[in-house]
Length: 71
Image: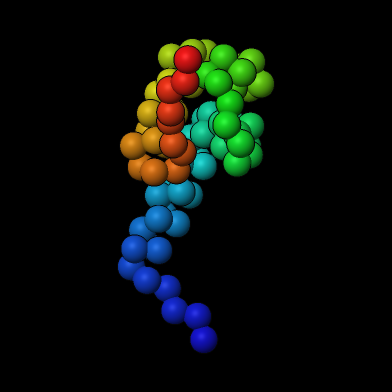
């Protein structure tokens, strides 16, 4: 028997809310579990830089993607 937890339900609701965003699904799809530099991601999905930044900040804030800086 499967039992859902409250935290799991909240995560699913948040994820479904994000998928309704204009660029979110494309960002997650383009990343596909791999790391990309900002400009590589921007070229793959052809999104305006400010929109891409906003979407990535939201996904990072809520733990769906991780950001790291490299030289």
